Length: 338
Ligand code: AHM
Ligand code: MG
Image 1 (spheres, rainbow, N blue to C red):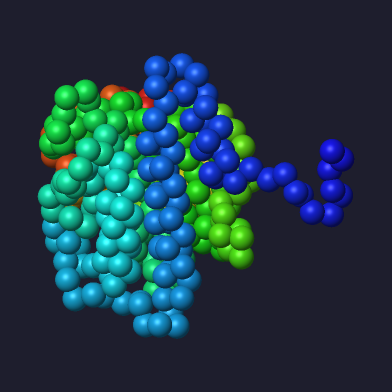
Image 2 (tube, rainbow, N blue to C red):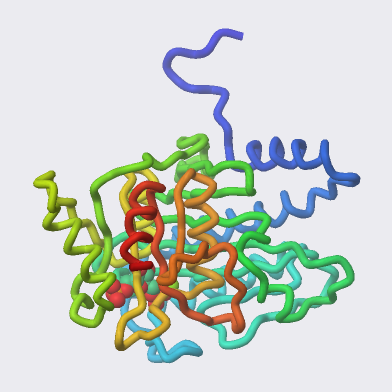
């Protein structure tokens, strides 16, 4: 059939994409169950529902603090609480998830039933930006439960490289989902009236080099000398080349999204006040490292170790994070290891 010149009539929705991926996995695995497909379907419902609430938050008084704090003492916004509830309810309703770890919950949540997946998430990352209408996002990672496990903390205290899927949805001018199931990285945009995520950025790849850095430079007096020297070298290049551009939104999802599309590097290093860094390894560092590597980039900690090889010792563990274009992170690593 000839393509219609005015309206693209053969679009790839997330559901169609997931089914295609499922068939690929199915070809190589003994019994394709479709469980993973159903889980991803529940995830996309959570993203749409969260996007809907963020969009109307100013009109229906969902901005501002909820008056509560999460397990690690951060003040919660009303939308942090709503996003968390939406996410947990969607995972429970899928029937395919046994465990959920959320930034907003002190302990892991174990569901009844025989779900075979564990999902880790930050339901609304960057929520300090919400009231200003700046982009925020949901970050998530998925582990498959090992054979014989009935669901315990051990199922998520595993290296990030064992995740079977990871990604984020950025709630900005549109809702953008970036997803990897371990076979490259793809970007989808929510078509609001249609209610579908459409494949708009197939096979995303970061440029290997780009002179953009993204870091909260307000912390620079607290950094180690190695970190200070690295950023100084970007701003005052000794070879007389053009200095790097600074871009920092303060929402990890938005800063990482720009880094994937334009290249460059993003970091949140440990410092003398936050000795282990700010970002959480399990549900922020791992999913972003997974996506970045699948898009051809690198992700390391303050010691230059590959983030996806690290093993968390507790669910809310923090880590320094350096990620982005391969060449830029290799350069950062040289300074970190001096
Ligand atoms: P949150 O999970 O409480 O929203 O905190 C994580 C956010 C990241 O999105 C962002 O990279 C970082 O905190 C910004 O921190 P800062 O305001 O210190 O620059
Ligand atoms: Mg967060």
